[in-house]
Structure formats: C-alpha cells, structure tokens
Length: 198
Image 1 (cartoon, rainbow, N blue to C red):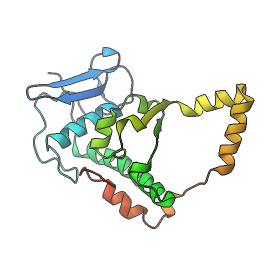
Image 2 (image 1 turned 90 degrees about the vertical axis):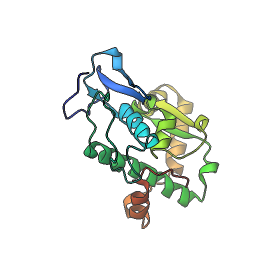
Image 3 (image 1 turned 180 degrees about the vertical axis):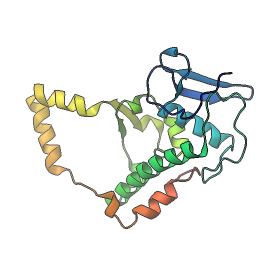
C-alpha cells in the first residue's frame, strides 16, 4: 500500500482522507471526491485518533505506546497528535470556563453549535472520544456550516434578522479566556485523551 511521506496533514481538498476506521483486519478510509490519497485533513485525523484511543495505541497523555497498524495509509507521528491536543485542549477549556461563568453543567447545555466548513465533516462521536467536544447527547450537537456568511446574508435581506443581530450584539459579553485564572490548569487537563466527564 502506498505510504504518504510527511507532512501528511493537508487542507480538506481532493485526495485528503476525511474519514478513517480501523478494523481487526484492515484500515478503511475515504478521501474527498474519492481522489487518490494525498494526505489527511482534520476530520480524518480526529477519526484516526479516536481509533488510537479505542485501541489503546496512545495513552492518556497522547503518547504512542503501541505500533501503528501496518495498513495505515499515512504517517501519523507524535507531533501530529500533539498539535491536535493543543487545539482540542484550548476548545474544551473554553467550553469549561464558559460553563463555570454561566454556572451550568454539561447536562444543562441545550445546543452545541459547531460552525465552519470543518464542522460539517467531523464525526460527532469521535470528537467526543478524543475530548474535542463535551460528552453531551449527540442530538444536541448541530453543525451550522458557514454561520458568519449566512448571518451576513440574512442581515442584508431581512429587517427582522438585522434587529435580532443588533439585540444579540447588545446582550453579548466578551470573555477573554487567556486572562481567566483557571485557564492554564483547565487547558492542561483537557490536553489528555482520558474520558472527559466534566
């Protein structure tokens, strides 16, 4: 099987592995547009790491402790894992701090909206397995695509939408996560791949 040389990470474009699953006998993956495999994008990396967690290929700290499957079509190294840990740690820490400031538990989260193109393609369950999003019922997690563009379009064509946007702007508070005294500890805790039940 062809092995992709480093760097194997790439943007979500034709040939990028967008989903991946490891079975007992094989590694099953799909590339964008079914094009020849050229690397792996974010959604594929999330799937791969969820499989590594499930199969105990990496430990709670993200360290690779077992050989990667022989049939893995790309090279995923320790640095790739660490980079995803930084992103997921920051995101999860932000959610934790907002919960604390609002004095709500994860069970009280009514909806978890994920915006951007990236969100449309990630596997919700795998995102939870690696600790990218909280362990809430999957039906609460909703992908909304390019919310900024859609919001701008609605504001331009609808007086009602414009009024709603103005109301949201007046009642929205800015939270600077980097100045929160608990951010560094929360971030460090969220870096791991242990099951997060906060």
